[in-house]
Image (tube, rainbow, N blue to C red; front, side, top):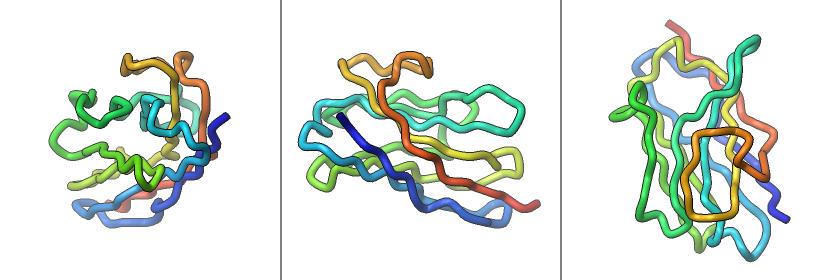
Length: 124
């Protein structure tokens, strides 16, 4: 069982930066592949980025590549999403998720555990 708690969301101006954190409980955090997703009201949850259990492999969404960076610190049981050059269209609730196995999937159905989300609002 893994419990995930996101933090770091808030209001930021366009062009600004935020770093989201996702703290995980459980001693097996280091064995999970992690992902960040986001959801705009009325739309489906979409994949943002994923990272392997060891941190040596990442999978970024083309539209966000170069602006968003996922990383993890297994010693702190935490995964991060650094978001730079934010745009109004990045406004959403951001969720972290964990899945067993080494494959980094962009599909929500592949993830076993989810956090409650943290809201990001980018003002233009």
